Length: 196
Image (cartoon, rainbow, N blue to C red; front, top):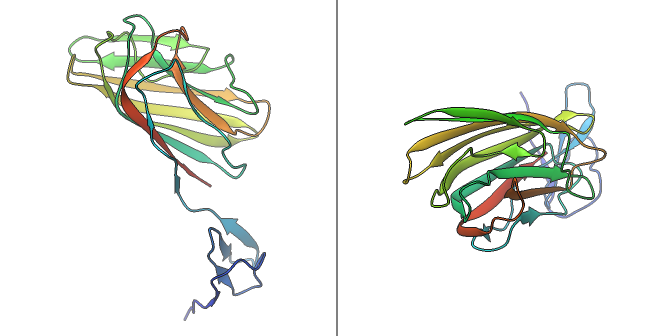
C-alpha cells in the first residue's frame, strides 16, 4: 500500500525522500528513488491582438517542454500576409524552420515555409482565427509544431500546420507575427499555456 505524506507547505529546497512540496513546485520520486522537480501547467496573461505587427511572450522558464498558444478571433489587416508563429532563444529565430500548412473547405491550398510556423494560409484580411498551436521539445533545442485553426465565420475553412526548428539555445520566447512582418493585428486575443 502506498502512502502520500504532505510534510510542508513552504519552500524548503529540494525535499528529502518521501516529501512532497508545493509552493509553485512539485517534487516526485520515481521507482529508482530519484527525485525530480515536476512543473504544473502555467497560464500566461492574455494579450489583445488588436494592434501592432507582432505579439510576444518572453521570459519563459528554462524548464518548459511544451507551449500551447490559444487564439480567439485573431485577425490582421492584410489579404496577403500569413500569420506565423516564431520561437527563440535570446532573440526570435527567423530562419531554419521546416514547416508546411494547408487549408480545406470550401477549397484547398497548401505550401511550405522556412521563416516561421504558419497558422493559416492565404486568408483575406477579414478572416478571424480560432484554435490552438502547440510547440513541443524534441530534445537538444529541437522543437516540433502542430496547429489547427478555424477561419470563422468568413470563409468556413480549417487550416492545418506542422513543422520543426532547431534553436541555438534554450527556448525563452514565442512570437505571433505575419510572414511579411508589416500587417497589423486588428482583432482577437491570444494566450499561452506552458508546462514542463
